Length: 163
Image (tube, rainbow, N blue to C red; front, side, top):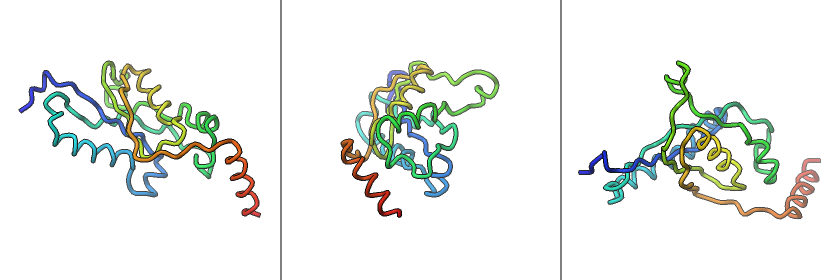
């Protein structure tokens, strides 16, 4: 049996989905990934050294604009769109006027798909602003970055097929 006082806590922090996406799907992909990963990790000898926990620290502040989502956006457009879209999830103490204390908490971000890294960068920024240490990130899939010529060609093809 592990000694809780000597183990290091590591929080697996899922990237939140918008409320609209969660309702449409019926689940939040990153949260399911984090839960499944934690179930597997808890079966390993790593639990003698580390205590793994789900850290639901983030939330989407508001619905993001753009009907097409992020799929057709480039790196800079994604960064602009995601900037300030997340915040720390409120707790009872934050409702009473005290901010959530994340100082010193070690976090691993969990997301389903990595495209440009803008979402992970925004999540890291907000967590670190509140004192957490982001020690890593995991994703299931990564989308190869398109060159500017591929993006232009895709936009032209999309415009032609929509006429």
